[in-house]
Length: 279
Image (tube, rainbow, N blue to C red):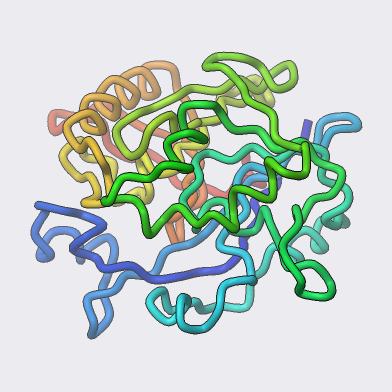
């Protein structure tokens, strides 16, 4: 098995929304804001090569949304999904499996693309199975008002219509060595791939812990539908991760790809930062 960090681009969100009740004077130290109070965030996917399987976890915002939509998110940087795949010698058609942590547009927008004649949409990865779960899928198809702007039908419906959609259960293995942990604070049924790699455990934490600046338990997002549940899930997970020397893979941290943890008097905190290639 091999792991590759796949950078699909950067975008910006309001720093206050990303840290909720935490004062800017604190979060600005780890996630500095621009003049509009926006902070830069990565859309970092993870690619897993295992035998004849090439598994992509999340895929960024994609390129099918119009300028009117994108103007709120300030896309920047030169990274793209295709560029990052090409760097490792792969292309879209090589992907055999796509695991979607959850169906917010910045995690699954790259799942679907315009057809060549722009008459409609089709899955980006024509040879891949798309893995989600029924709770998150049903939740996204009938969105609540809080999340409605994050669930875009064009990112979701074409996957189901193509016949490539598959549902997975919690703790089920996609392939040997890759299982899925679920959480319910950020959204219903968010999935966190747990990967056994080089005798280590790597966890794709997705939006439960979007950046290394969110490691303290109370540092949760205003986007979470159940913030108190997020805190409880984080506290339990971080303790377990620190005690078992897990490696956390960050999707949205603009600088830090991975880290290990340590237990301190203030709670679980970052121990060491490193690149995916250094695991």
